[in-house]
Image 1: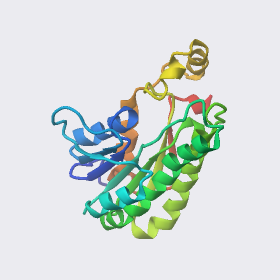
Image 2: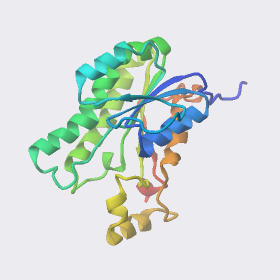
Image 3: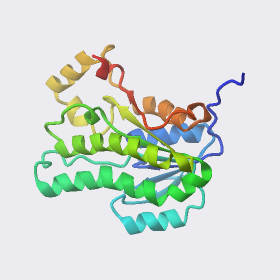
Amino acid sequence: MAAPSFDVSGKQVMVTGGRRGIGLAIGEAFRDLGATVTLADLSPATGGSDGFKHVVLDVCDAAAIQKLAEGTPKLDVLVQCAGKINRGREYEFEAFQDTINTHLFGSFRMATAFKPQLAAAKGSIINIGSMYSYFGSPHAPAYGAAKAALVQLTKSLALAWAKDGIRVNAIAPGWIKTELTRPGRENPEFFRKVSERLPDGNWGEPEDIGGAAVFLASPAAKLITGVTIPVDGGYSAS
């Protein structure tokens, strides 16, 4: 019996929201294992060569996505990490709509635009959900709604596109030390409540998500589609 293969070397990978935080850490994991990685982000790249290809992209811009897809002849893995929270404004309709547009509609735009390349490669999509895919988000209702919907979209696309050879999965990160969670970490009461619920008391690092993404894109996960894997240090188990 052959040993499972976790090899992603030579794969063409695109990560949206890839300039920082979890997106960058996932990109680094693939790059360091021999994949060719494109980071697509609203922010342009700065500094010298870092082993990535960089493109400036707004996932709310359908024309820009289509142009990028037309200029991308091959793609094995699409990681969807672009997102935002309109913190303090999500009970305003326009802000609510903006957050949904980025997380949910943006992910759908990217998936459908790159479906031909992914089908040709028998590739995979990895959507980035959240603990708020499952728990209420009173301070960010649009973010919570979008992340919950992304889990359902993952299931639906997995079923619809299985015949094309495309696997679609998601990762639900727990409490990770990123710029997005900085306000929570700087709030002593909130930080204490989260830390007490974590079995080992420790918030995760962005690089903790990379291994799960690599696994889901690898041959070892060939039978896995339509699932969302929590990478949360046991937060959702408690």
